[in-house]
Length: 163
Image (cartoon, rainbow, N blue to C red):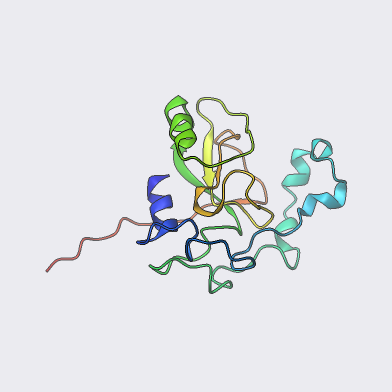
């Protein structure tokens, strides 16, 4: 989580990849929830609904990587906020939850338990439910969870510059 947040905040330590203030439509977020077509009560949506492979193919929702050319960090990393939730290798425990509470970020309450996985950044229907911008964190799902809103980023360790 620390590495992902550092990448999202960039060298400036900003709240959003592109700066310190929210700029609407800069990243792929805040779009309507695709499953609202099934009704506005999320408790009636099934896990199968969330895993319909056609959902990510609906025009106007998931964007190709880099399409939002202003949703980029000062170091050139695209789409860390919105588009897809990004899994990180951390797992949920009391220490992580305490650290999140110290962020001073207002988040909607999420159920959690030890061993749950962590995903960050939100997806295309996210607003600020679990924190704005680079502070968005979801802790409510077991590590095997997947749906149309989740993805991951393959990264390599940076090589040290040799002078």
